[in-house]
Length: 172
Image (cartoon, rainbow, N blue to C red; front, side, top):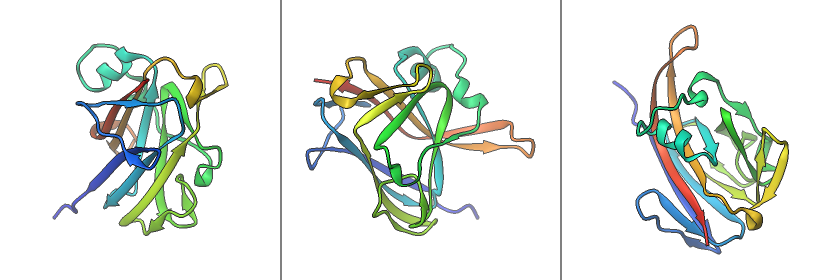
């Protein structure tokens, strides 16, 4: 019997949940956070881009090759020390929680690898291609997010993926 897997993701800003229209979240140019509640999902891959066509292709709505699906995840800092999100058109990040001492979320995450709650605060975006950090307040272009759980074969070829969260971040 397959175990139930559920990942609930909310975006919060200024202490309030930001409600989407479809998958569009309109944010003010200030720090925001993701709030996660997980049952049975230890980790997931995070594709982040400013290229709408890569995002639409990840969703199956356009035909560009999506490099995220060809690569395994990149590790970001423990406990989200830099309060940033990597933007990379070629490889996804890997966000996970295995214990309160081993995860990619803000300090204070609770639970165990089977059932956990965590927050990930975002003050800036780190663009891997240019090695440039851009504060949320300076962002002008939309940011597209595609969180997914992969299924690999024994040779680590991607067989399937399940989208667990998708979002277009638009700035006021």
